[in-house]
Amino acid sequence: MIHLQTPALLVDGAALEHNLATMSAALPGPRLRPHVKAHKCTELARRQGEGGHAGFTCATMRECEGMAAAGLGGDLMLANEVADARRLGALVAMNKAVRVTLAVDSEATIEAAAAGGVRDVVIDVNVGLPRCGCAPEDAGTLASLARAKGLNVRGVMGYEGHVVGVEDRSIRESSTADCMKLLLAAHSDVGGELISAGGTGTYDINTWATEIQAGSYALMDTAYGHLDLPFRQALAVLATVISVSPGYAVADCGLKALGMDHGNPTISNATVFFCSDEHVTFIPDEGSPVKVGDQIRVVPAHIDPTVAYHERMHITDGDDVLETCPVDLRGW
Image (cartoon, rainbow, N blue to C red; front, side, top):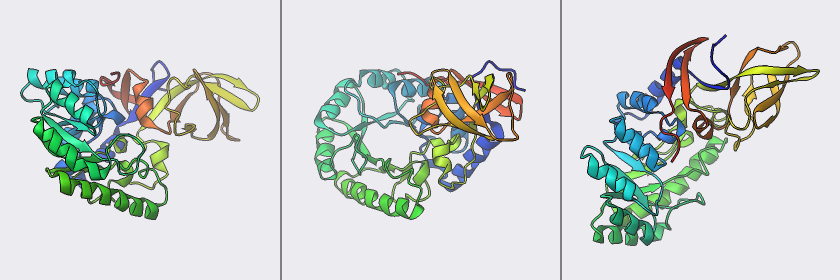
């Protein structure tokens, strides 16, 4: 038994080290720009840096600030547009060792970067995911505008996020190629040293990008677990069985402890029935009864929002807690 208040975020130490080493071997040094939004923990980022990855991807200004405070801000990319970049400009101005490259995709976001004191930008290009990004044919014009504003344009970024989770690898391969044709066309107009793209599901497919922004590989979840990747499931939420009824049981791990946008979590030797605010109701397999007080490990379908619900993660070896790390990049 692990003596922690539940629900508690657990990270299998051996699986974590396997995942970090496997990715570092596949994408050494600058070929990987780890995305810290997946784990939101500067201690895990430090371990990624020790694996040779000096640049990091961030999703929020808070992540940039936390990484800089931890001494990991030498080459950060904020892979999101912002309408007010003054926090980033102040961050760079306060520490000459910090470099932040901001994604821009419009005249307005370029103006925000320049007015906020940001020095470096990357042109965000829509390669098929209906989210941020300019049309590929507009990238060159935006790059010229950014340079006219005195900004250093480092290159282009485009995320094939609608592709990374496709289970059929052949479709994942062909769709990634289609996306990167768009990004390469934009890069030919923009220039710069960076072609930044990719994720855990396309880390070994996307050979067109100069750097891959994978993040989930470090901890993994059941959504990526369907893709037959060489990474191990490292993350689980420890829960305690609090009620047992004929045919089902309930543990103290619900919607407020789990990212549910990719579906139900999984529990070994059981079927998850449903989740509510603070409870997971599950049906134990025949021959695998549970009783009140038993601990179970609940594996989330999506790690990013799961981690963000928790204030700390516990790195474990079996039932031994080796280290407790704050999830210090959560929030905005």
